[in-house]
Amino acid sequence: MPRIVLLTTGGTIASRLDDDGADVVAGVSGEALRATLQDPLEGIEIAVDEFSNIGSYAIDLPLAFRLAQRIVGHLVDPACDGVVVTHGTDTMEESAYLADLLVESDKPVVFTGAQRSADMPDTDGPRNLAEAIRIAASPAARGLGVVVSFEQDFHAARDVTKSHASRVDTFRSGEHGKLGEVDGDQVVVYRKPLLRKTYAAPRIETDVELIKMVMGASDRALRYAAASGAKAIVIEGFGRGNAPPAVTNAVTELAETGLPVILTSRCPEGRVKPVYGKGGGKDLERAGAIFAGDLSGIKARILVAVLLGLGLDREAIRAEFTRLGG
Image (cartoon, rainbow, N blue to C red):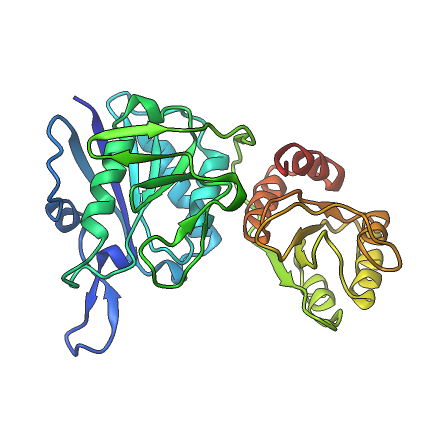
C-alpha cells in the first residue's frame, strides 16, 4: 500500500471566513484537510505533517527553503512513497521550483491547493487534493521532479505559472505544455521534463532582487538594490532581453564589481537572446549580464538563490543558466 505524506502549509485550500465574516484567513488543520477528501482513495495510506498554516503571500525564501528540507526529510524515509504539499497559489510556483532544485529523490512530490476557500460550496480544494494524492501514489509520476497539480492537469515546476488571479484552472505551462493529467483514477503522463538538475545546497542566498522593465525605466531601483546589499539582481527585460539605456549603463558598471545580473523577458513566452545593439541585449551581454533562456524572472530568482548558496561565482552561475535556461 503506497504511503503518502500530506505536508500542509496553509493557503486558500486551508482558509475560511473569520468569525467576523470579513476576511478569508488560513486556519484549517492538516487533519481537517484530510477529512475533506470525498473521492475514494482506497489502497493509499495518508500521513499528515502540518508545516505551517499561513497564506502563501507570507512565505519568504527562508521558509520555502525549510519546506524543501522538510520534503527531503520525508522522502529519505523508506516508508514514504511520495509527498503532497498543500500551498497557497500566490507563491506556489516559487516553492515548487525551489523544491525541484533541491529534492534529489525520484519519488513524486506534488504541490496543490485551491482558488476557492474551504467554506465555499463549490470549493475546488478536496478535488485537487484527491488528484494530487493519486499522482503522488502513481509509479508513472516517479522521476518527473516536483509537479504542480490543479484541475486534473499537472505541470513541471520549472515551467508552470499562475496565469489568472481567481479562475480554478489558473496554472499553465505556456508553450511547454502540461506534463499530464488525472483521468478518474488513472494518471496519464504525456511528456517528461529534460531541463532539470538538482543541487545539494546547504543554504540559499535570500537577498536576490527582481526588477521589471517598463518604458523609460530609470536605473534607480537597480542601483539601490546593489548599494543596499543585493547579492544578485534579476531583470525582466523587454522582448528578447533589452533594457532602457540608463539600465544598460548601470548593468555595465555593476558587472565590473562581479555582481551577477540575470536577464529574463517580461514576455510570458519565448527566450532571451542578445540580438539588439545600441543599449539592447548585445550591450547587456558585453557588460556581463547572464541570459536566462526561457526561465521566467520568478524562476530565475529561485535558481540564482540556490546557486549563490552553493558559493558559485558569476561565471559558474552563467554555466548553470546555460544548462537550465533552455
